[in-house]
Amino acid sequence: MGQPMRMVSQKTIIEMKRVFQLSTNRNLNYGDLLYERDFPDWFVAHATGKYWEWTEILIELRRGAFFFVTDITGFSTCIVVEKRTLTPQEAPILGEYYVQKLAAFGTTLPGSDSLSRSLQLDGFDVDKVKLRLVPLEGPVRAEEEEGRLTLIVKNSGLPQSSIILKHIDDAHSLYAGGKDHPSLNESRSLIQALIDGISTETDAHGKHSAKLPGGTANRITYLKEVGFFTPDEEAAFKSGWGSLSAGSHPGVPEREQARIGLVLALEFGQLLMLKCANWKANSYRKFS
Image (cartoon, rainbow, N blue to C red; front, side):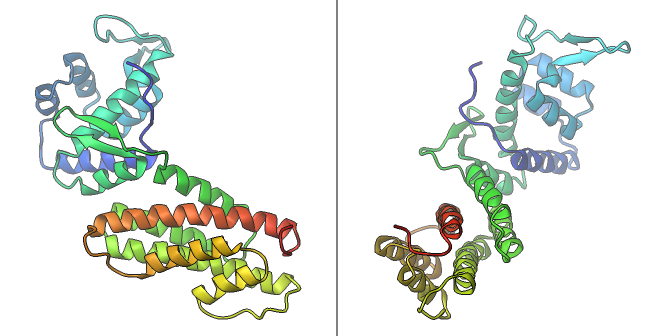
């Protein structure tokens, strides 16, 4: 197997475990289900030997340890895989292949909508016939963008950081849980909290004649007047804010509106926080 272009996130692995455990409670026979969907006999036999403990199976697949057994002396031996043994370098690659194949299989089970959404945020669509993940077009992967923004916010020193971080987490978790409209509201609240935080910091530490107004749109204008935003950036953020605040967009499914809103908020949020770091370093003065 070649190296997968993308890996599913750890959040998605937990969603997989939840779906599999839910189906275990319905007494599904995983040995039969996987074998009839072309999982090899050695895979089914080895997973059966682990009593279908999904936390153990999925984590070991991610690490590559699934394909090895350890005796009482601590010596590890590779099980026979596809008529050969694996090297330690090959094992994590094959493990990720089966994580992704299991993820695709999981989307065919009852109660798997949140798994499908989590995979979409990871940047994958699902081919349910061939049981494989298909990378979505484009470089944006919401899981990675969320991680970047979270790290920047944690290091920003903004007094509102805890509020901002909660909006990031809530927008993601609500979308994954199928709550599209509340997720879109949280994406809007994320941008609002970032604009408010940067505006109030600027008003407290800067030496600007412009007074701090109320309302997000007015504060976007304020940030342009004090030199934080260029006129083009002001127009872009007002357009993005307007899109997030517009409510429904006829012709676009609500699920897609929520996903696009989340990606938009994460990308705009990163731009805001990167500018904010340089803004503070420049003593809240207009960039030259």
